[in-house]
Length: 248
Image: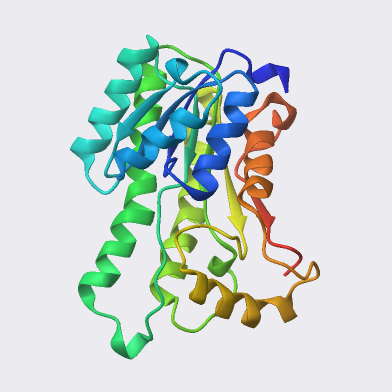
């Protein structure tokens, strides 16, 4: 995808899992990446895995805090000399708690990290891109198939991910006049470090019977869809949802 050569990107949650795979694919396509993660060591590890680490930046970012997001975007602008016109909101986590046991603090944290975080990062980068007079960009927000599928013990997670779909669709309308496309990717069961091996095995056993492709997905398979949406090959696509879920 030669159209990405020389572009700048910000990837939140880039320290592991899908976010790391996205960074690796972007690096392959000649994109300079600001790898943002609450775990700065993880972000730096991702940078070290890229073919030219000196071309990229590791940034500690708490996406649930506006000041931290602003500092991270500013750091990327300073390092690259311009704001990234490509964004992938991957930051997040998952836990499994039945409704009757779910604490208010746990619900709030999930909403703050996943939903509020997607808002804050998208807003901050949109402001920076518009202020710089850049008239072309692509933002991808990572949602989940659980936004559409009922599942036990994930109500708070599903609510946040469903909210991300609403943000994506509405932001796509607002940012279209500025040449910025906004789309959402909905992964299904994917093998990532956010779940323990035991939990992944149990969830996979529960989900596999529902899938057309009888296995869990790999982070790089989700990243390939993200890469397509960031590139000019998807130039007439915005406000859309793309499922990468093995045929649920």
